Image (tube, rainbow, N blue to C red; front, side, top):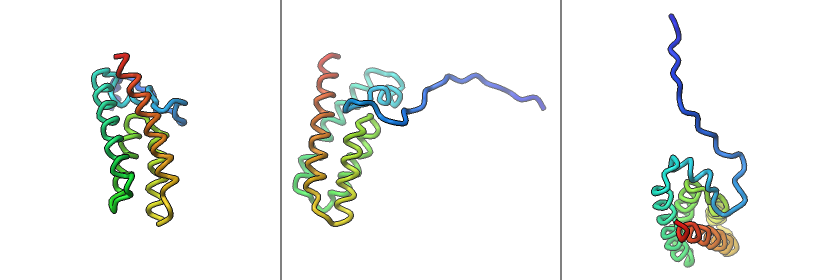
Amino acid sequence: MPLHLERIEWMPSPPLAPGDGPIDFDHLQRMTLGDAAIEQEVLTMFSAQSATLMHTLAAIPADASALAHTLKGSARAIGAFAVADAAARLEAAIARGIDASAALAELGEAVAEARAAIEAVLRRS
Protein backbone atom coordinates (compact mmCIF):
# COMPACT_ATOMS: atom_id res chain seq x y z
CA MET A 1 0.00 0.00 0.00
CA PRO A 2 1.58 3.33 -1.02
CA LEU A 3 2.06 6.02 1.58
CA HIS A 4 0.16 9.25 1.17
CA LEU A 5 2.36 12.17 2.09
CA GLU A 6 0.98 15.63 2.60
CA ARG A 7 2.99 18.81 2.89
CA ILE A 8 2.22 20.87 5.98
CA GLU A 9 3.40 24.30 7.00
CA TRP A 10 6.30 24.20 9.41
CA MET A 11 5.94 26.08 12.69
CA PRO A 12 8.96 26.58 14.94
CA SER A 13 8.95 25.02 18.38
CA PRO A 14 8.84 27.21 21.47
CA PRO A 15 12.24 28.13 22.84
CA LEU A 16 13.73 25.96 25.56
CA ALA A 17 14.50 29.12 27.51
CA PRO A 18 12.31 32.22 27.33
CA GLY A 19 13.63 35.50 25.95
CA ASP A 20 15.27 38.14 28.10
CA GLY A 21 12.42 40.63 28.25
CA PRO A 22 9.29 40.55 30.39
CA ILE A 23 7.27 39.29 27.39
CA ASP A 24 8.53 36.67 24.94
CA PHE A 25 7.08 38.20 21.78
CA ASP A 26 8.16 35.26 19.61
CA HIS A 27 6.09 32.97 21.84
CA LEU A 28 3.16 35.41 21.73
CA GLN A 29 3.34 35.54 17.95
CA ARG A 30 3.23 31.74 17.75
CA MET A 31 0.29 31.58 20.17
CA THR A 32 -1.67 34.16 18.14
CA LEU A 33 -0.65 32.65 14.79
CA GLY A 34 0.99 35.94 13.85
CA ASP A 35 -2.28 37.91 13.98
CA ALA A 36 -1.34 41.38 15.26
CA ALA A 37 -4.93 42.23 16.20
CA ILE A 38 -5.19 39.13 18.38
CA GLU A 39 -1.81 39.94 19.94
CA GLN A 40 -3.05 43.40 20.90
CA GLU A 41 -6.31 41.99 22.25
CA VAL A 42 -4.66 39.36 24.46
CA LEU A 43 -2.03 41.82 25.70
CA THR A 44 -4.76 44.29 26.64
CA MET A 45 -6.74 41.56 28.40
CA PHE A 46 -3.67 40.28 30.26
CA SER A 47 -2.72 43.77 31.40
CA ALA A 48 -6.20 44.38 32.82
CA GLN A 49 -6.51 40.89 34.32
CA SER A 50 -3.09 41.00 35.96
CA ALA A 51 -3.82 44.41 37.53
CA THR A 52 -7.14 43.15 38.91
CA LEU A 53 -5.63 39.93 40.22
CA MET A 54 -2.73 41.74 41.90
CA HIS A 55 -5.18 44.10 43.59
CA THR A 56 -7.18 41.12 44.86
CA LEU A 57 -4.09 39.11 45.84
CA ALA A 58 -2.79 41.98 47.98
CA ALA A 59 -5.13 40.87 50.76
CA ILE A 60 -4.14 37.18 50.36
CA PRO A 61 -7.78 36.03 50.20
CA ALA A 62 -8.85 32.44 50.82
CA ASP A 63 -8.75 31.73 47.08
CA ALA A 64 -5.29 33.30 46.61
CA SER A 65 -3.79 30.01 45.43
CA ALA A 66 -6.42 29.68 42.69
CA LEU A 67 -5.91 33.31 41.66
CA ALA A 68 -2.14 32.82 41.44
CA HIS A 69 -2.75 29.69 39.38
CA THR A 70 -5.00 31.63 37.01
CA LEU A 71 -2.39 34.35 36.60
CA LYS A 72 0.31 31.73 36.02
CA GLY A 73 -1.64 30.20 33.13
CA SER A 74 -2.50 33.52 31.54
CA ALA A 75 1.11 34.67 31.80
CA ARG A 76 2.43 31.50 30.16
CA ALA A 77 -0.05 31.88 27.33
CA ILE A 78 1.29 35.30 26.34
CA GLY A 79 4.95 34.61 27.06
CA ALA A 80 5.24 36.50 30.36
CA PHE A 81 7.37 33.74 31.83
CA ALA A 82 8.79 35.77 34.73
CA VAL A 83 5.22 36.49 35.85
CA ALA A 84 4.30 32.82 35.47
CA ASP A 85 7.31 31.70 37.51
CA ALA A 86 6.62 34.26 40.25
CA ALA A 87 2.94 33.24 40.34
CA ALA A 88 4.02 29.60 40.68
CA ARG A 89 6.24 30.52 43.64
CA LEU A 90 3.35 32.38 45.27
CA GLU A 91 1.04 29.44 44.67
CA ALA A 92 3.63 27.07 46.23
CA ALA A 93 4.18 29.33 49.25
CA ILE A 94 0.45 29.46 49.92
CA ALA A 95 0.16 25.68 49.52
CA ARG A 96 2.99 25.15 52.03
CA GLY A 97 1.36 27.57 54.46
CA ILE A 98 4.41 29.80 54.73
CA ASP A 99 4.58 33.60 54.69
CA ALA A 100 3.75 34.56 51.11
CA SER A 101 4.61 38.27 51.35
CA ALA A 102 8.00 37.97 49.62
CA ALA A 103 6.51 35.86 46.81
CA LEU A 104 3.66 38.34 46.44
CA ALA A 105 6.11 41.26 46.23
CA GLU A 106 8.15 39.40 43.60
CA LEU A 107 4.99 38.73 41.61
CA GLY A 108 4.01 42.38 41.84
CA GLU A 109 7.37 43.44 40.40
CA ALA A 110 7.13 40.91 37.56
CA VAL A 111 3.59 42.03 36.73
CA ALA A 112 4.63 45.69 36.75
CA GLU A 113 7.49 44.97 34.32
CA ALA A 114 5.22 42.95 32.03
CA ARG A 115 2.51 45.61 32.08
CA ALA A 116 5.08 48.33 31.26
CA ALA A 117 6.31 46.31 28.29
CA ILE A 118 2.73 45.71 27.15
CA GLU A 119 1.86 49.41 27.42
CA ALA A 120 4.93 50.30 25.36
CA VAL A 121 3.89 47.85 22.64
CA LEU A 122 0.29 49.00 22.62
CA ARG A 123 1.35 52.66 22.32
CA ARG A 124 3.43 51.82 19.23
CA SER A 125 0.51 50.07 17.53
